Image 1 (cartoon, rainbow, N blue to C red):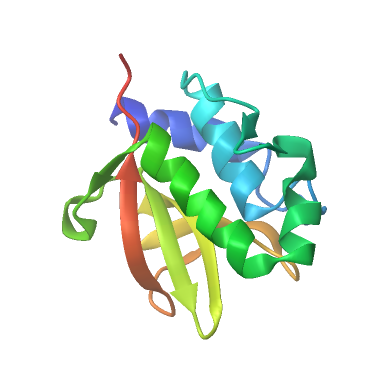
Image 2 (image 1 turned 90 degrees about the vertical axis):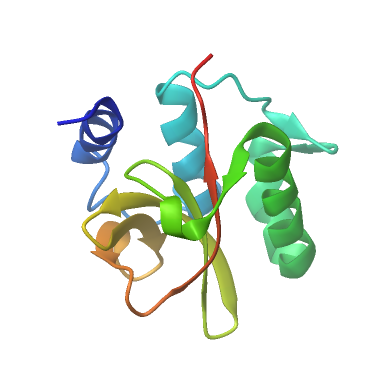
Length: 138
């Protein structure tokens, strides 16, 4: 089993089933935690918005918050073709009017957070993969 898959399994083992908590367990924080626990060095503030304040920012201006999240990934990760994604890659997903982020869990699944389900692994099939990003260990 590859290192990326092992990192994701270890990361998700204590998180799947955790309830959604604004500003603590939401899709952006889940991905941020996965990346930093995998060794990525990422800032806790981006464009004047701290990680702790992101959810409040999202509640006030969801579209701007989503664009800032995508800008964050563009700044610190490498964008890849969606077809070349592998387990552990970061996915920008859409479903109906919502845009959110998840972690490719392999086998057509994604690790993400839903208000109703908390942290969960679900099939990718209902979502459209808009973009994909990869973090490379230096």
